Image (cartoon, rainbow, N blue to C red; front, side, top):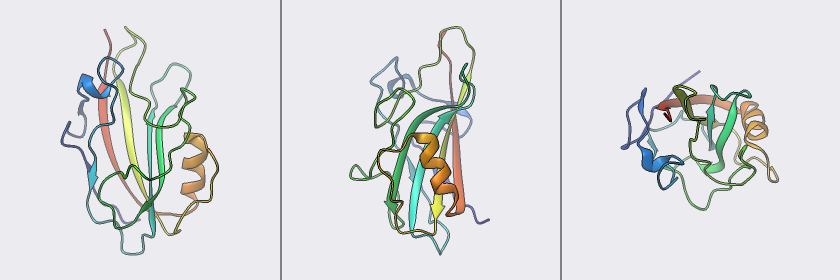
Length: 146
């Protein structure tokens, strides 16, 4: 499966996510940008999750119907309901003293123009996108609250 790259000017792959992008700061999404996706890409979906959450993988953000021509997340793209119960970016906020958590930013290249979803949860978005995935890029950030 063809891959491409997802990067952030805020942190390196495997590096610490700065506090301003977490619940201990402004809670804003980090800047993300990516390289040219596979040639057959018709749209993109972004999934952000934490596989280290105490109750199992926790969905922090889902964005879909991103045009294939985009190279960053567009404010106009629809967002999934995160596991905090709201739409939009749910900032990393692991329990204090729970150790390092890995936040996976996964960008999926899809061979569908759009996903016809209505208020999906992050996990539902990922499942729906998986049916059309033709490539992927991943960036992992680390965050720990002491």
